[in-house]
Length: 258
Ligand code: COA
Image (tube, rainbow, N blue to C red; front, side, top):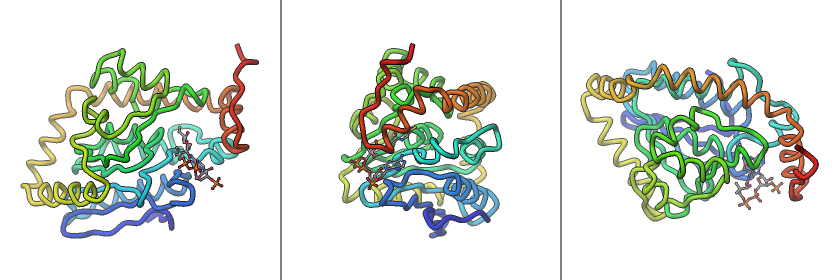
């Protein structure tokens, strides 16, 4: 199984706990971490005693999304890129996935939530999809799923302006089920995971499949279209300027690009 010191996996009473744990980089995801997350999902899928996956971050952060240094120096490419394999596995998972989200959940930190079955957020949660701000485009079928969830205009606000939303807004927009205080969000998510782990497993899997069946093929096709464009955009001058400015801790200057 592909492992990373920054992704911790443990099975507790039918629940596979997956912790994104790279706090000094705000849990930013590297290729190696995506591969470890994929391996964790594969482990959950192939272990009969695992009924539910619970994904969480660390004390003050879910994840700052893709590692910016990787984006700059070692960008993902093609369908076999670790990020694409992770998203593909996330979409294909038959067993339910619960996310417990606190602090920043940026980029894929938010788009992965659209593929989870239950999402619980802390008051501190800050969800953001700054793809346009970074000279990129949406990923993980977010440009299909968000308008379906909340309508074009509200999705456009999130995707075109890259605006940050808090926990309560995430619930109001349908991205999350409920918001709790920072002391209890993880315990609340865990309680739901344990409850779900006790439900009849075959019926849970069948119901998840039925919930997604009407749109799953279109979702996969759209995710592929987005992914190809996203990879192209990564080498665009705007994206290079955005990534460099982040690493160099300065404001990006997009004025020279048409
Ligand atoms: N990739 C690589 N390093 C990252 C990172 C990322 N996505 N996000 C944060 N870090 C690093 C910072 O560079 C900083 O490093 P330093 O200690 O060497 O200065 C460290 O993690 C702490 O981040 P900092 O920005 O100081 O924390 P914050 O609490 O002020 O802000 C965020 C947190 C997540 C809001 C902010 O770091 C951020 O916007 N990160 C980029 C998110 C992003 O655009 N991701 C890609 C989406 S496609």
